[in-house]
Image 1: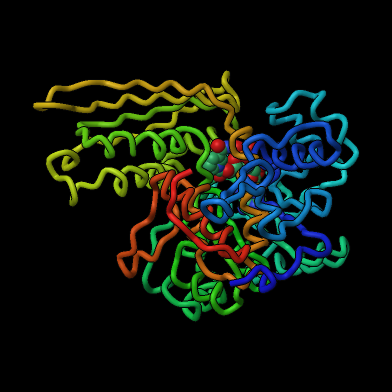
Image 2: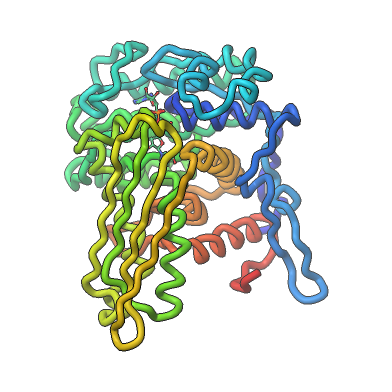
Length: 435
Ligand SMILES: NC(=O)c1ccc[n+]([C@@H]2O[C@H](COP(=O)([O-])OP(=O)(O)OC[C@H]3O[C@@H](n4cnc5c(N)ncnc54)[C@H](O)[C@@H]3O)[C@@H](O)[C@H]2O)c1
């Protein structure tokens, strides 16, 4: 594809965020501050990374924006939905991720971002208790009300394009059910029949976004768009989808570190990961049904990097455990510990310990920016369905499990996929060189 096949990023881009919590407000505040020149969007690939294009004498390193047309930060308009009615300024202050001095310069703009009523069902997040909630009788009504929100916001702010991203609480685990989730017709029937067990509120957001011609990104581990019915809808509406679960702290380290073990043909006996976390996300994940969704997502990372079928002597029976412990004093400043039991020459055991004192939302915010800008780019480039090149940003990348397709979890393979997609959309050749 030549770059001229990619539509230009003309006009405003509306970013509609589900959830107005810690991640969402840190993201929005950072973008508003960055475009005033008051903060730096550190960690964002679209704002910092340079990709090599061409080879030999012709090679040069370019920013993404010099290869493909990306929306400018100045052209972004924000909207949010939340169960709590507090505006983005109040929510940012409540989250206590950012200092007041880093919020106040954009206070006026944040105060104008007032959550629209949420499509919410308490059975999906028992620990959340707000009343800024839509009064809908059926899941179908929920989806239609959300479609209305999208249309209204797009018109009011005169946006050329919309992207919808989920940064709301993790819902309880919804196992994929072949009878409901495998075809669009079955999914729509279940929405009409108000099947609350199989249709999570998040599915109504995704359904609404795709139906309104907006890409949808799932930032939590919810199964939402990770079902064949949604793949079908994305094909039908020609919209990009991606998920699941922002890859921020511990799993980022895991997907970057595990390749060291496999590349050197060292063995693994066990990998124990634990976290303490005290924000509202931690509170929701303290509920076993919600933690189960996160656990499935976090556990999937190692299987495709340390492969038991390829190296049974090294990786056959390793024990992989992930825990998240709610511990209020730490708030958003999550601490993660990893204990890795490896073995080497003649089977001799060794241990590696990793202690990451991170800031959850500070790591997540640049991912939201990149995912929104790159999903918008993908739509303009005519790419639709699951966007594998966005796996780089995801803990549990979407893949077609009905055809036994494997997810790519290795961070360096994911980076190659990301760079090649940008190269291709920019009219350059894809390649596998490491630099
Ligand atoms: N920060 C990270 O490193 C990270 C990494 C991966 C995934 N995530 C996920 O991102 C999400 C947001 O994290 P956070 O720390 O901002 O949590 P948070 O609790 O601060 O914010 C989530 C917000 O979503 C709202 N909400 C819940 N259900 C909703 C619904 N149906 N519609 C609209 N709003 C709804 C809640 O009221 C809350 O204000 C969580 O699912 C978390 O698991 C975060």
